[in-house]
Image (cartoon, rainbow, N blue to C red; front, side):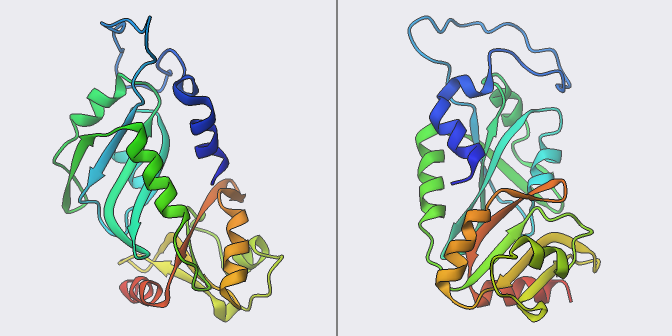
Length: 222
């Protein structure tokens, strides 16, 4: 599990503090409720209908003005389902996030729902138990990153340039994603220790993948 998500679980509600940050587009009023006997609700929403090439940056732009603590994309059989969980910086931000329900991201309208801490944790557990096939999907790459940079990121493993596939978007530009074919499933599982480590100024998310997903993503950019 990435360090950021581990901190959220370990620290609980206190992780996101007691007051909104300065990056807000609005001035949040004081809470109309008291948390004397119980902690504040966990600030997480669930999104449905996301584009299949959606990135964390897209989600952050969709919720522009809100503090994004984590974005967890949901996969089933190693395929992106179009759903995600978004952890916000402060409980009151959930109401502002819900106002984005059925607004567009690209050509698709996105549904936004209230969610619960338990649903978010369950989704994390499901992602981490995914089966390894020897292929990892990388997300969050700097757009300037080349194959050499990715090979250096995985310098503890034997890789060739042919094993690194940088995904392009429909305009032929780097999408911030890539696929890496490792020698075997054991290596790809071991390489998950690099999840959420940085390449340049960006932290990189890693996901177990498989050849069909890789070929489909590569073909979209051709």
